[in-house]
Image (cartoon, rainbow, N blue to C red; front, side):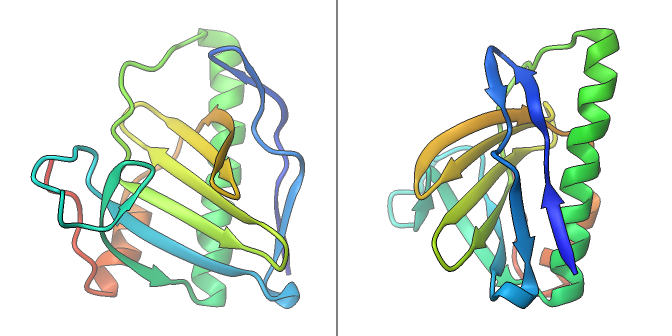
Amino acid sequence: MVVALLVSGCTFSGINKFSEGLQVSQAQGSKITLYSIEPYSINAKDMNQMYGYPVLGSVDLSHSDSERMLEILADGVWKWRWRNSILRSEVACFNPRHIVRIQTQNDMFDYVICFQCEGIEVYRNGIQHSYAGVLAKQREFDNVLVRSNVPLATY
């Protein structure tokens, strides 16, 4: 089954795109990993980091978890976009606690997610690609991490 994050024309803080029609398919050999990160780098000099955030742990997602996480993200971006078209809200922070990494045959996409302020930074091959909003619940991402004994952020 193909899951798509297709949110062209999404605007957030002046950036005009979320992704360029990223299509992800398990059948095409994509690997999807969920990371737990600490939003602050306090005492983190000895920890692995991604985009300046300490990594607490990660789990390679099963096919069903991959589909569910990507579905939540795509739906959350659509909901944020619809709500924001009415309310015109802006973010107050960016304290991400999760990263979803999608490794395809040719590219690597990282979605650095702050559910607190509803922001997502999107990186393609390590370079910031776009920024968007997401209206989704952190709990489902946390449940996958906890089920795999990956620690959650403490802050």
